[in-house]
Length: 120
Ligand SMILES: Cc1cc2nc3c(=O)[nH]c(=O)nc-3n(C[C@H](O)[C@H](O)[C@H](O)COP(=O)(O)OP(=O)(O)OC[C@H]3O[C@@H](n4cnc5c(N)ncnc54)[C@H](O)[C@@H]3O)c2cc1C
Image (cartoon, rainbow, N blue to C red; front, side):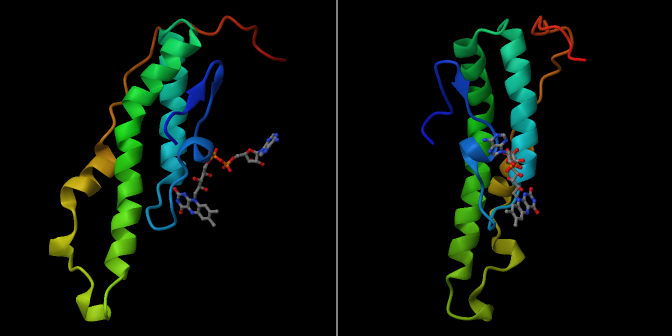
């Protein structure tokens, strides 16, 4: 999706950036996204516009690298026989590295909580 929020509505996980069976990582993206969304909202003192923008800024290139893995995988299967499949030395190592490690997880310790009373 071009953007993952509108007004006070923000999307996360598959609803925002569902990955493909050919890329995997859907659970990891959802969990990393949840951590960043909560942290960015908290450090923005719960201003949705600022928090959503920070979440998307930190997360988007990581998501795009993972989605690109799915496209690369699909292309790699579109070959004329098993011998034509890319060998490991043809794998896009930089892209794989960005899909695994390409996101910074700040330490949000000390960020203000939402101020909502804890549930029962
Ligand atoms: C067959 C299959 C295999 C997969 N294998 C892998 C894998 O090996 N590794 C991997 O990383 N990812 C895998 N995935 C992807 C992964 O499951 C998803 O990317 C991940 O679960 C997304 O998490 P989410 O919280 O965004 O959505 P979900 O896990 O789908 O959670 C959404 C929740 O919202 C609930 N819900 C829906 N509508 C409402 C409503 N109106 N009110 C209240 N609740 C509602 C649903 O019941 C659901 O519990 C697989 C997916 C499938 C389908």
